[in-house]
Image (cartoon, rainbow, N blue to C red; front, side):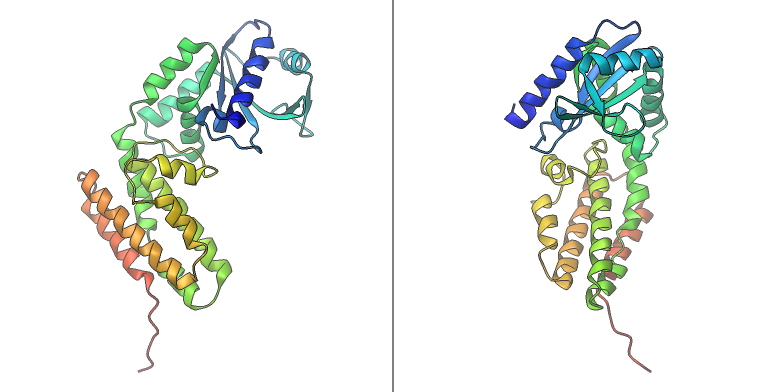
Length: 279
């Protein structure tokens, strides 16, 4: 492991190892950037504790006392500081986690919070209760086709470049970069669905893009470069990238409704702002 990842993993393992055998504590997982191997010098540690039922106030206080943790927020025991290290502690029941799994894997919910939770568990490293966590990970390994198609149907119509083109020619950088960022996020969601990958939040968008097998070439680098180009140039670059993505969708998802792709292509073709000539 890289050093920024390795010492955080060891720190989390020691924290979980220091916990007594609380009745009803079924599993502990380290997630987020540490589990994904993304941590940098600014990364906190995300720990998940899974219980038969939510711990009572005395148990929650006992956890803080064992760790000698300080609370970073005025209320709640979620954001902690342990020996100077920020730790985000998430606690939920096994039944709650099962319900989230069913919501996404069975019912194909596109709720972003639920999908991010699935990604957290899917990439997490068990520190206690490995059998339970590995069972969940085996379930999440099979990304549902219906979930991917749902995301594509929802997000592809947002491939619409008219407002981006207008902001570029009207010298409105605030509107331009706001719209550009929104379109980058939409593109990211489409590519995740195309790769059968759960939503890891937008925080590590570029790192995750570099890992996707099905994507336009050098996708992350090209998105970064758009923020360095004049707006009309960046808009043209994005149009090219969206067209490449639509070609990938056609190739890899032939079962997708033709009307969805047609509407997306129509939106991408609206990128060039054409002045209206007075009659």
